[in-house]
Length: 346
Image (cartoon, rainbow, N blue to C red; front, side, top):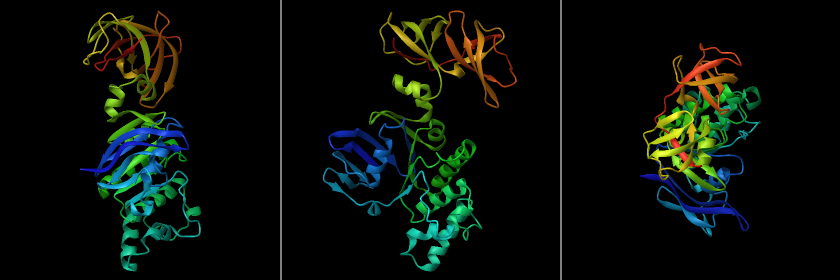
């Protein structure tokens, strides 16, 4: 049963709509992300769900009860939601424990202490309850903000770019910790982010947004392998497009030869199309039929991302295990190993 239903919602400022006809659901225990570039409307959508922004069309239901509709907005404090912001927004004059307990003033003192102790342990802050925010690292401050938001036991946690001020390694580690914590506490969550790696690490479902609309609402796997629109294909992951001609619904004539996929192309036979080639579609093979010159390389630890220039001048990306070490200008051979071939109108 859905915990949150956003039905045909539009919102904005004056006559300008920042979000338009937005529709999606969040089930109990599910974590989702709104993913997109700056200005796409994802934060406005989150603020509308929180009750900070009125809506001009549609409705928002939380636990099957109307929370927002044109001319009606239930206050944020009556929505059983928690919120984690980009800037942490901690109270500098309060200890870590008092920050976490801030929303628990209606509880008995003993119950407050039990809940604070539980969240200190759950967020990896055990023994830090008497410290002040300025005595903590950025990651620890973000954990305090998360614990404070979870303290009143909300049914839904809203997170607005919560890791963007942290370094890459800490951001990746915290995103996984947050997912595990929400799952263990049985709390649903919505993450707003422009970082696809963050969204994929946390989410069961992701909505890719542009110009106030969700272009595709899907699992991370499907967004990567089966993007429904050219923008989604460009925004998610890495890849390059090559021209092709549809020969059968699942076969394309290209400069790489006849490529076969496991998904039917909607374009007519003989139509010119563009085919998405991901870096993991080109596999290193000393006997491969495709030859390319190394034009660029990016070391990624276990892998190296090479930019290969084909004899035609086309440049494609290919992932090699890092022990396949090549220099700029080297000639390497690869083969196609792709099932999820996606075509778009040429």
